[in-house]
Length: 326
Ligand SMILES: NC(=O)c1ccc[n+]([C@@H]2O[C@H](COP(=O)([O-])OP(=O)(O)OC[C@H]3O[C@@H](n4cnc5c(N)ncnc54)[C@H](OP(=O)(O)O)[C@@H]3O)[C@@H](O)[C@H]2O)c1
Image (cartoon, rainbow, N blue to C red; front, side):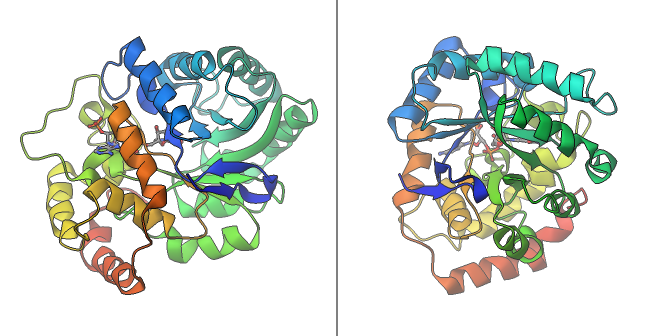
């Protein structure tokens, strides 16, 4: 597993991390044994970056991570988030609320200091007002968090956050269905030495190419209950592409795929080929998926002309189908 440095933090993390939203049960029910097996496989395979949030399963995802990674050593980094919890989102933010939330996360994660705390898709006006960044600095000075960053829905929000010189990372959606960061963010994040954490590398699994028109998702899976954005931003489910349109687009994109890659590996290798990206955080519903995703780190880069062809395809065929502001 290759590592990259996370922004200005000097922290070395694996270029393939693990997204842990699914461990909270928001992709359908997850058994204790499956959650632990996924985390244990990730550790054994060299993953050293785990992304979670206080709200994933109301703390369940953080608790699993705390239990399994308790003895993992300081080179294993955990990033969690603040800002979508009841009482906080959308207008309950304060230094006291932040401190309380961090304390609860520390308990669940079994860590005295959280490696990276990210603002979790908070309202644009709260990030623009800026007081919340001062509160993060207070909590950092108290030693409860080592670094802070922001997870955002849109590039204009990323640019607001990037104005803070001590921001370590931005978490964004960037995949074959969402390529705008390439032209609108990466030069700036690199100039400002801000790490880029890529979520939804597989557009919620769509880019693995394994779904078809008969695929059904569990009632408790956001790919069912949020398929049209009824619970939260539609951009967080299938990257904002309507499912049947997504199936068509994946089929077309698969014709660009070299034979030696699976579709999921092709989609993730494409992301890692961008030097501005620090890590990808694919979610996984099985330990086999974790192993397959880790293998992407060792695959060769894709040729430049293929990158250009995939960008052209995005501009002509994909971008107009994204059902939210990006
Ligand atoms: N606002 C935010 O900050 C925010 C929002 C969303 C996500 N995130 C973070 O980003 C992480 C990743 O996002 P995500 O899980 O929503 O999307 P994703 O990584 O694009 O998709 C994950 C899904 O892809 C499928 N998959 C994974 N590896 C595969 C493989 N090797 N072969 C075939 N299928 C594979 C699995 O689907 P099946 O379940 O069908 O097997 C898995 O549940 C989350 O866990 C979370 O940490 C953050």
